[in-house]
Length: 158
Image (cartoon, rainbow, N blue to C red):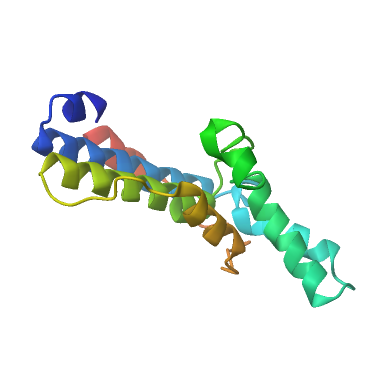
């Protein structure tokens, strides 16, 4: 993608971006096969710590669980690359819902830029990330089928 972007080759950029996003989708599928690689497991364990607590405390545990693996803290800690993605995890749910969405937004902006169209020039990543952290999306705690043979064949065919 970088070489295509630097060469201002829109078609190559889009083709490589498509492959890149497909790899992310495959990572999501692979990590979903193990309970130890599920974002939902992490979030639910945090929420369980507040089992007998008030609603505010339960929500705070959930927020902190998600912030620890993404923004790590406030705007000042995150921006400028100081601590952004400091505690990065490759977990199902996080890969597909957080990282892929973030990459897709960046790819869309670069594609529009290469095409000479309007695009987001100053994306406030922290604002988007913090919104994700504050969401109450429920993520699965149950792993999927472990048979990834079709996925392996699909990857090898490319």
